[in-house]
Amino acid sequence: MQYKLLVSDFDGTIFSKEQGIRQEDVQAVHRYISNGGLFAFCTGRMFSGILPFAQAMGLKGILAASQGAVIADIETGKRFVDARIEHNLAIEVARFFQSFGPKSHIHVYDGEELYINQDNEQRKNYEAGCQISSILTDFDIAKQIEEKKISPNKINIFCNPKQKSAILQQTQEKFNATCYVTTSSHNWVEVSPKNIDKGTALHFIANYYNVPIAQTVAVGDNENDFPMIMQAGVGCAVENATATIKSIAKFITKSNVNGGVAEVIHRFFEGE
Image (cartoon, rainbow, N blue to C red; front, side, top):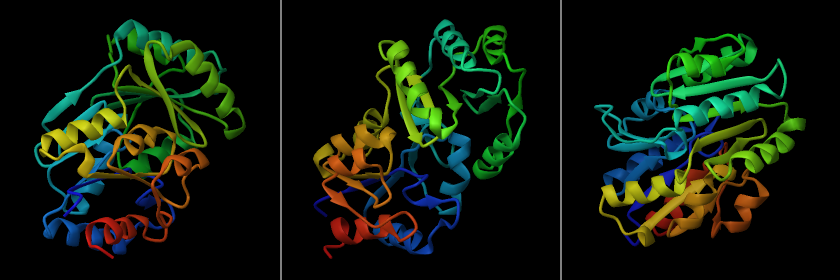
């Protein structure tokens, strides 16, 4: 194989809320692995939020979660990377998100514990979609961080899509110097540790498997995928990706609901 490692985003790339993961993609991944290829997920989800899907696919090896802040083994749970936002900085980020009003829906990811400050339909949908349970806090989730001395892997705010761009810009202006600020959908703004992203995760996974970065392929759909798509040997975008991701991709594959990952495997690993 000219390319030896395929790293894929999850939501919006191989997974959709409507269809889940298509069997076409699952079969292509297994065919690729049986032919000697290496496959890994790199997602914004927390480890326990991606693990059930990786296990259901029968995957082994490592995967990257929380925008690369966590890299762990699927079978054992052993963590090779566990990057954290410094405690006092995390309090500051949470208070900043709270300043957007009493309806601010904030997630704090602390290892395998997820704290959420609103008990509403969005919380229920998130738990169901990720197959996890969360810990409900008061609106003042910053106080929870302070009292429990949490240094989280990631802090998210769930936004009204009409407000997302403004919140993202303000968060970047305030925290870009100390954190990695990105977005993974039309309604999420996400803050992770500085110098940790899907690009650093791609390099770690490639090094772990002794694969030169030039022999890697990465596929994604949203702004948080930018670093790994730029740094992979071949960066790919699904058809439903944002305009920014499509503009930097070397190859645009089918959408997440039409077997986009399977087409990447056909194109780059099976010589079709």
